Image (tube, rainbow, N blue to C red; front, top):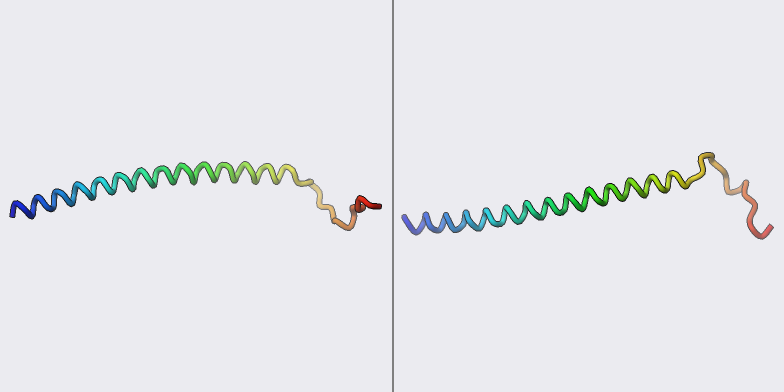
Length: 66
């Protein structure tokens, strides 16, 4: 009986270590996701601000060689 309890305690210890490592990994990944989402919003804002406000057709523009 004592050996079974010891085995269970060992397994619990390894499980706690694994859960803690997984928590750290998930935390780091969430930080990366948040950073990437912020960068994506910034890039989207840059693209939207660089586009002309009015719609212009390419047919309306004169090619450079004319």
